Amino acid sequence: MFFALPGIAPELAFEDRDDIAIENLTGKITREQNTTYVQAIDPGTQIAVRLRARNGEGINIVVLTREQALNVWKTTVAGKERLILSPANLYFDGNGVHLAAREASLMKAGFYPGLERSPADFDRAGDDGVFQVFSAKVTAVPINAKIQKVRDADPTPPPKRDKDVAMVPQESAFAAAARWIIDVPPSDLETGDDLLLQIDYEGDIARLYADGNLLTDNFYNGNVWSVGMARTAAQKAGQLELEILPLHDHAPIYLPRGAWPAIPSGGQVARLKSLQTLPEYQRILRVEP
Image (tube, rainbow, N blue to C red; front, side, top):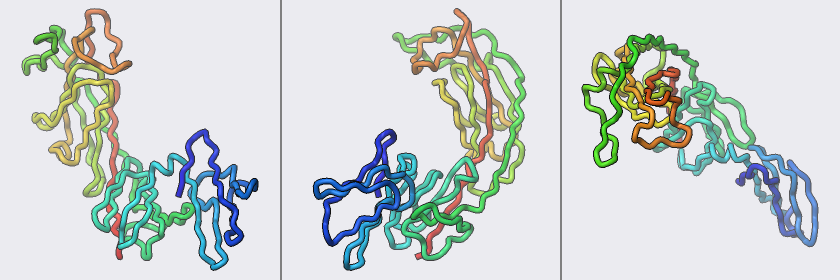
């Protein structure tokens, strides 16, 4: 099993031997100075080259794309070492393969060698080259939260310094924060699934509350803030509150290149750019020995 680097045409070279036959299923064969070259290979999950000996033994060679190689896992399940190809995030627990993805269509896994029996709650989904594919029985669940701004941020003083280091604002400073109410509707997500809030904002510090209790906070760094709801009280709260403390122009903090928002000179910003609710589906594929 190999993979091809983007921009570099994969090529295999074999020493010529009378007792070995080389069959190219993709690409073309050339021979030069007792060496057989297989060139112009089309990367993928199919067998690219097959070597056959006179005694009937053989070796199959697969040349994956770089993207496929990044989605291949090697582990031992059901007493046999296997490769698992999946666009989902995976982790393993004995003979259980845990899949997690934000799109229902990504909840699938291909096995090589294939499984002797189909796992429960998964459908046989054909083959992807040498990989035997199973897909989870997952129905996409759309979830659309409603957002209402309840107050703008008040003017706040610039951050205080202590030995040239910005100090964390006092608790009283958050009385001036901008606030939003987020209504998350009930969903048909199954037990074990998660719901992610993707909060894209500009400001100094953001906080998220459920029923008046602080769930978590985030110091602005230019990235989208992702909050998982499954393990918090917010899963049953239904209504959340978001507050954003303003970020001042030239605040004495470090932000990565390109992360600073556009702020008028001497001004401040506390802006919710967008908020998405994304389900994260999770299933366990159990492989029977």
